[in-house]
Each structure stands twice: as structure tokens, then as C-alpha cells.
Length: 537
Image (tube, rainbow, N blue to C red; front, side, top):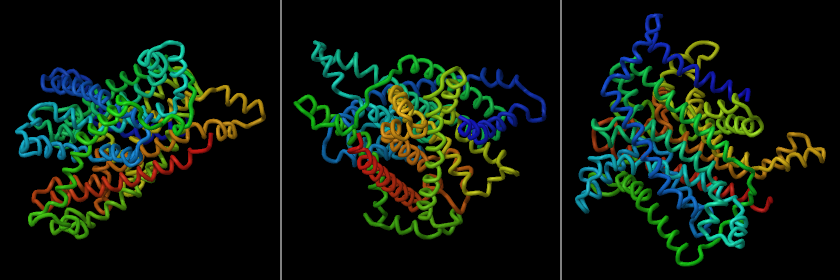
């Protein structure tokens, strides 16, 4: 636990505490009365209420739509499965501002649904909820499906032989085994929607505001650090309470599971019911994920003189306004370098933390389990500003260093590594390690020979999540990325923030490149995972 604790203390706790300290102690004296004043304001109470409501609604809707997809990807084998698995993860790496823009073009004024059927969803909360499902679909599919694919189906078949119906066998055998993974996925979706910023900013307008958007408004626009500090504390306390409840409930349900290679559980659909389920999942993916992505691609080619590559060619040159110190196209290489470094950091820190949580017990470790998830629930604006005001003098003067961006991105990637690996690590039968020790294996060799083959698939999935999150991280990166080394999301946001058809078209073109880079990277990960896990059990 030493390295993860030190990492979070320096790069998370210190920046956040510094921001709160400056907000509540501006002149050296604490002003705790500001907390009551802020929380008694009607506008702040409305923001808190809507934030919690939309997060719960988004989480429930995401589970309802994505759990059938998790089953299909885990248990069915069909042509194009690896490609489709990579495609459904693409939305998760898109900047949230871009996700909101895509749905506005799809369901807003003069959008696709408005032109075809006269249907607009941007006047209510449905556009926000659907955009959150679009963004978080892959979280459920990969987190739950990753474990589901390794559950031995013969246990459920044994229950049916003993007289249980298909539903009873699933409810009494498979569902309890999936509870930790489902709970982990629901927790991640809730935290992401609870701190939603870009989607709400675009689709909510002035009518709907989340806590994250209000922190940004108070910090960046009104320069009201005391109010922002109070809201940060509220967000921190709410997320901490949720994580504590999650850790307590899930730990009561975890048991050792019999895991098998996913190649032994996936098969072609049988019967009309299974083919209908596969067709329904494919249709939902097409409408909810492929259609918004298709709108972005179409707009990247639709120039004023017709379809062409004009917007893509413009990415390779500097603009006259001086917004970019380098051509926007260079953001691709920057993003890949940052994402690879952030993935390495997240896998090391998250892997050590997951291993420690598996081996140890006690209140201290359970509290550390909850603390690992806090970066998902604390405002990225707060973390970004905190980096600027804390890491600016020796021995940690990193403001001019390139490593600052991967460090911020890794903070968001570590919780995904932990939550993806932990259910599988805890499902490994401890008697296997004991048998290896009896035969003379050292702890390192026992881990390499027993744990690693069983968790390699989860490790690769975790690395893919960390890489995807790093590619799309925007909230903190926008404050710390150097002007001569912008990432793809930062470059897209800068283009979207400037008027003109050319800037908008370049933003769509750069977003399409981001989607392609993500899809290719995830597809390569799928191939690597399949090649390295087949034939090893």
C-alpha cells in the first residue's frame, strides 16, 4: 500500500486540500460560517437536488440498457465481436463537451430527430440521460462482462439439472457472483454522472446545472473560491459516504468463484430467444452509439462546398488567430504519449492497490478502498487548479514538465484499474496460493504462476480502460496542458470555443480522428488479450 498511498497523498490530497484552504481561509483565519451560508442558498439547493437525481436516473437507465449487452459480449460468439467491443468503448474517451454537442446535433433544434419527425429532446432532461448512457455504456459492458465471461456456466447448468428453472438458476447462482462487478460498474457510472460537466453544460443550458458545472462557474467565471471550496467539500463528503456504503455492502457478498477462460464460455446463439436478444443489443448499439458517432463523422466531411477533406487538411496548418502554437494535428501524438505514460502509472499504482486490498483486511484497508475512488467524485477543476498552485516550487516544481499531464490523467485511471481487477483477484481461490506455497513456491512465484494467469485478462481490460480514460480526460488537463503540447480533447474544446464554420468543422475532424485512434487502440488490445490468454489454462 505504500506507493499508492504516497501517490494519492501528493497528487490528489495535497492539491485538493490547498484549494479548500485558500477558499475557507483567505486571510489566514478560518471562515466556517461560509459553509452554512452557501448551503442555505436556494439556488445551491436546487443544484444539489438535480445533481443527485440525474445521477441516480442515469445510473439506473445505463444498467437497464447495458446489462443485456454485457451478457451478449460475455456469452455469445458472433462475427465482428472484437470490433464491436472496441466501438462501444469509443464514446467513453470522447470529451464530454463533444458528447453534448453530438447529442445536440442529434436531438436538438434542427437536429436529425427534429428534421425527420419533429421530435426534440433537448428541452428536457432526456437528452442528458441518453448522453450519459451513451458515455457510460462501455463501463457496464466491460466491467460486468469481463467477470461474466469467466464464470463457469456448468454451475448454472448443475442447478438446472437439480430442477431449477432457467430464471431461478440464474438468480441463485450467477447473479450473486456478479453482484460485486455490477455494484462496481454502477458506482463508476454514478460517480461520472454525479460529476457531469460537459454534457450538462451543452444540453442543460441555464435550466439544468450540476454540482461540477457550478464549481466551474464559481471558480473560473466568478472567481469565488470560498463558494467553490464549500461545494468541493460537499461533493467530497457525498462521494465519500457513497463509497463507504459501497465498500461495506459489496464486501459482505464477495465469495471465491470458479473462473474459466472466456473462450470456454462464449458460443454462438441458439434458439429464437437468444438470436432476438443479440439482435436487440445490436439495434440498441446502432441507435444509441453508432448514430451519434455517425453524426460527428458526417459533419467532419460536410464542408461549405460539399463533402470533402477540407477540414482535415486545415488541421495541419497554424491559424492566424494564434490560438494554437502548433498545428492542431500535433495533438494526436501528444495525446498518445500522455496516454501511454498515464496508463503505465495507473496500472502500477492500481495493480498494487488491488493486490493490497485482496491480501489485507481491516477498517484501514476498507477506508483506503473507498479513498481510491475519490478522484472520480472530486471536481476535475479543483484538481487542475490544485496542481497549478501546489506543484510550482522545489522539490516538486512540475508546472513546466510534461509529466504533469499523465499524472493528472492517471488519477482518473487508477480507480478503473482497481475496480476492474479487484473482483477477479478476490475471486481467486486462496487455496491455490497455499498449495503453491506448500510446494515451495515463493510469494512472488506463487503470484506469477497462480494469480497472473487468472487475472491477466482483467489486467489488460484495466489497461485499456486507463488508456481510454487518459485519451479523453479534459477537466484537469485543460488547465495544465502546455500551449505548445495540447491534447486532443483540449484542441477540440479550443476549436469548439471559437466562432466560424471552419473551426467547427476542424473540431469534428479532430474528434473523428480521436474516435479512430481509440477504436484502433482498443481493437489491438482485444487481439492482444485473446492471443495471450488462449491456451494457457
